[in-house]
Length: 144
Image 1: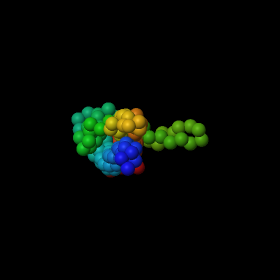
Image 2 (image 1 turned 180 degrees about the vertical axis):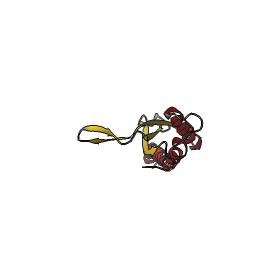
Image 3 (image 1 turned 60 degrees about the horizontal axis):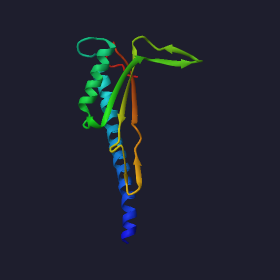
Image 4 (image 1 turned 90 degrees about the vertical axis):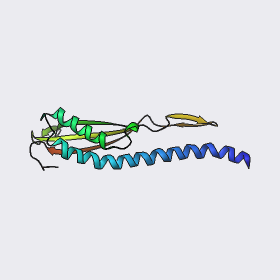
């Protein structure tokens, strides 16, 4: 029985670490979905101070990072581009005022890798989750 226990414990530890990291990632994704949309609607439409795209991106980024609980586990990236659609192989702009904010959450599992009793555990380099929203930066309340 001791041999079976010695063989089973490393496998149980590796599986529990995978489940732990997956649960943490899902929890961060759920919070990130809510926080990122709120940040884009509140800060992206009319950022305080300068009314430029970079000021809006910085304001959205600061709002998301400030609201996330586990900041040391993940990185947040925010980008902004004019909204467009693809039709017949050509890209057409919807409106010069419509802007697509893309927020990306990059999660790095803990620990990165280790070996216990011959059972290796290598987590992927990073898991990412993307959320985007199209808004009209000059008309409050217009969200697409």
